[in-house]
Image (cartoon, rainbow, N blue to C red; front, side, top):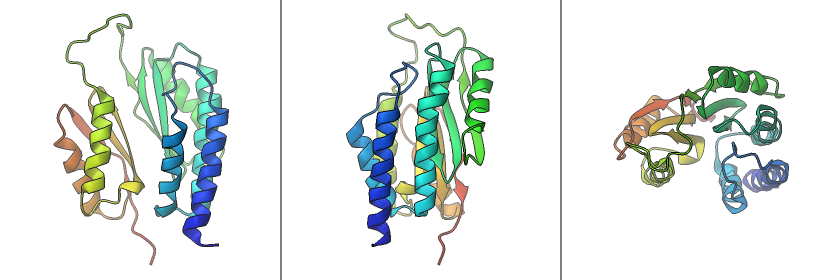
Length: 208
């Protein structure tokens, strides 16, 4: 079987497991099964191995099913992105202990290699306030990142992950060289309402 096709079917199977395992806690972002499957298909053309894709999907599913459930519904928002068994945690909590707890629980997941804990502690969070001063729409920013990195020559968008939290953007995944990593950061920094960019992507050239 062609490697790309095999990777695609494996990724889709893992995505299906992720959907079925996802709890309904408020702390989890809304899961769109079609976008998950789309991402899974795109994973087939990444530079990850079949084994890495399978392990990453398993880690993501376990995080969604176990970590969020353990922390409970008091958590405002915690998200995990996984690439080659490295995990980037982002989101917002009110208590520093919750940030520590999220990392400790994530470390218990099988095959996790490294954790980047970028969860923001913001207190007090005004949950009931309808309109927040200096409000930043992170969904809009993330959509623009997707479009601009996709169009950006010299950037392999399928190897990157990104999150925006109140306009603070975290890039994650893999760059094939320093130039690609720098270009990705530059593209994101120029997006309106982006306050800062932290590029955690590792540099790992493609195997010849």
